[in-house]
Image (cartoon, rainbow, N blue to C red; front, side):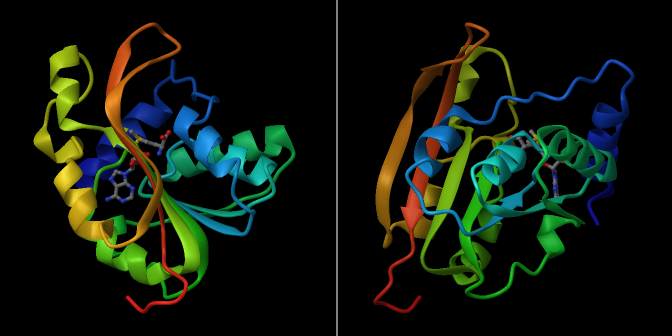
Length: 197
Ligand SMILES: C[S@@+](CC[C@H](N)C(=O)[O-])C[C@H]1O[C@@H](n2cnc3c(N)ncnc32)[C@H](O)[C@@H]1O
């Protein structure tokens, strides 16, 4: 169990002045709007903005996070929106994603390339991996994470999913609602239907 990660995020989500962001990832909204809803697994789901949006769009959502309070926020946001999602408290570095059981797996503002092989296996043929996270170019923006562990690299996505279709891919600077620029990698990759892993 990554107790450092759990403690850090528990502190954040239990802070008296913490207000969950309700707006989903702009890339999730754009890319998932064109998909047929099915079973979605939200990795590192946080306070639930993305999972709740997916549930509202008709997906059957399972949200996984290491932080119990993050998952409590997920359930609260879901209840406020009148939708349901399943929550699982787990350390993703030790979590079994299963085999051929998800139509969509999301990894949003969480960078863990070591999970890519498990994600490939966990998706059904024709299923989608949706990734949206700060890239290494975020450093030039002078805000946000600076540790290389949290900054995604094109090479990792290429090695992980280079042999799949990429209906959407961007490695660029994007304006955010608060006026700041975000450098991020955004990928929608589709598991082939006809070939094996
Ligand atoms: C920056 S937040 C992103 C939350 C959400 N994906 C979003 O976009 O709003 C990162 C999340 O990763 C979770 N996390 C960090 N390490 C984790 C681990 N080893 N296993 C599961 N969740 C983890 C944290 O608890 C936190 O909720």
